Amino acid sequence: SRTNTIFKERWRDANLLERYPEVSKLPIDGERAYVFFTEIHKKYKYPVFVNEKFMTEAVTWNRMANDGYKIRVYNDIIYIYEFQPTGLTMSGSKLFIENPKGYGLWLREKSNFSNYSLKQRLRLYYSYFSAVRPKLSVKKIAENLETPTFTILFFSVLYAIKQKINKTRDLKRSKKFNS
Image (cartoon, rainbow, N blue to C red):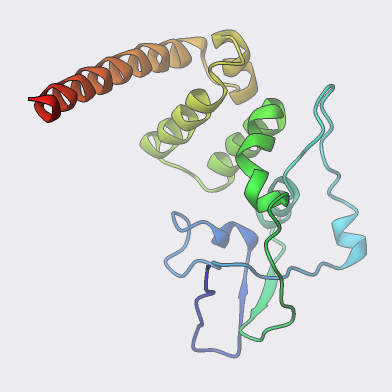
């Protein structure tokens, strides 16, 4: 169960990029309800990709934040919810992997809008690579992230080395345990 951080003020004005701890020292965390003016929200269409069925709302929220729109966040409880076993929170990772173009777009824009350092961007892109690697080619992964193919090839080598190290470590543990 997650708890929202309570801040000192009655409310706080922020942009939606401040949901990310790497962007703000006081991130807007936990589960919160977001309400938008309809005429503003309608300006931000959800991108559509052929053969994909899911696009995270974070893409539109991040675009609004990048364009300067702010939200007012309250400490008040305005709704009570219950996580469902078949709900978005429980199936989020699977949805992202099954919709890799939208997933790549979200991560790419998140890193651009949040002015990630090279190290932060590489970490983010490596996590994407690790998640979609069984499903996509190096070329497709590079296209989805709009990053050089060389970067993804580097991730392939890094991933293979990491797997080898893990396998060796597990083998040593197994031998130690069975001795």
